Image 1 (cartoon, rainbow, N blue to C red):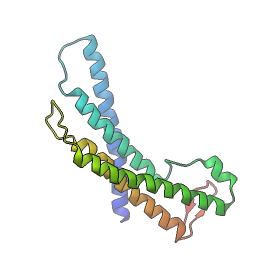
Image 2 (image 1 turned 90 degrees about the vertical axis):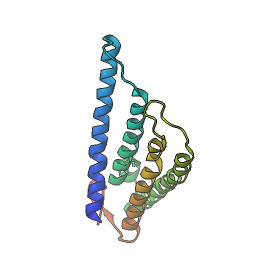
Image 3 (image 1 turned 90 degrees about the horizontal axis):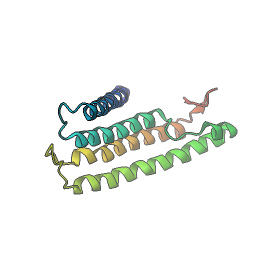
Image 4 (image 1 turned 120 degrees about the vertical axis):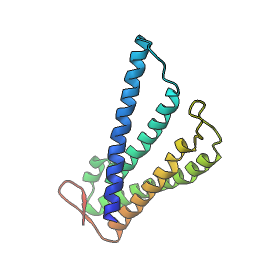
Length: 164
């Protein structure tokens, strides 16, 4: 399981970097082509939309996996250890709820989308699939984190990071 976790983490990290670089390249090329119109990029909007959706979802999954997406360490450090754990559990339960909403409504949205990208002529289900896929991964990481904190009685180190 740890190998799969590391693979997902590396994939999310490097795919996010690659998607961001491709988006920067396309944006830069678009700016240059407006100044010097040598050719046009067909399907530009569709590709950018696809890359942007998956960039947001994969980056969110990467941050979710690290447990740093919804943390306000100022509040955590003001509480005693037991309060920190309770706050972390409540925050993570809220995150799990959000992830489950993404799975359910993202799935409904993806399967009901009958839209086809005009230029690429591809069903946009591949765009919308980012929501349930990301939601499933976020849900799994939330459940694993809750398991570690509640049942393995993890504590906090000097930097307020949960440790076993």
